[in-house]
Length: 245
Ligand code: ADP
Ligand code: MG
Image (tube, rainbow, N blue to C red):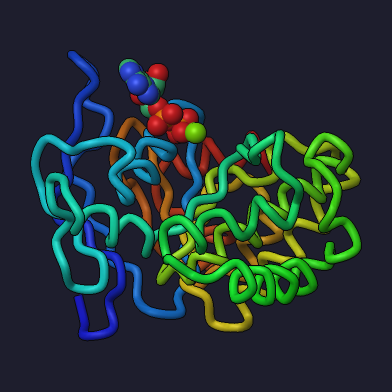
């Protein structure tokens, strides 16, 4: 851990009943770093993401965001949680709000911005993800790729310190995957700190500083994308790569 560490997990353990879903997880994500998390289905990747903004509690260990341990509850938790943006596989947009309202709701309600302030920034963010022309539409009128770009703009509107992506392209038709990956790649280039669970190996190679390979709730390998893809050291990583590449 260094002074620039934004997300730190120390010896994090979590069970679902008998299932030991996170086993002694240690991860450090530095400011501006892009960490891609990969691993077989059921290995604990989503649970890991969800613990980082306390959608799930942990049994033991410590999670720190920008040096501050996640508190159990209360106002401190709300604040730290809003430092961690989340983009899910299933978009999770508000169906009865327009695209622009989806992006401005959090800043108005949680960040206490004025409507005008939130809308100005909302337009900028929609423009940044290439979708300003859809601002007055409702989510159902948009393609999946467009909806996911709205979800990214909505997360950015809260000015998070780190953005978590949990398989953001897995629910998309193949022709829409790239437009979402392009937005993510440009965020990475602009220095956004990101933790990305994905099976998109092209993105991992292009944008990741580090790849974390999980299996059975443990971090099995951690290396640069180049080293991971060309010289995986464990049998589990070799086996996984042989199935997806
Ligand atoms: P991944 O995202 O890598 O596919 P998950 O974190 O979703 O893995 O799940 C890890 C394991 O925990 C799986 O065996 C899954 O069935 C289990 N699990 C996930 N969420 C719950 C829950 N809320 N209650 C019980 N078991 C769960
Ligand atoms: Mg998952």
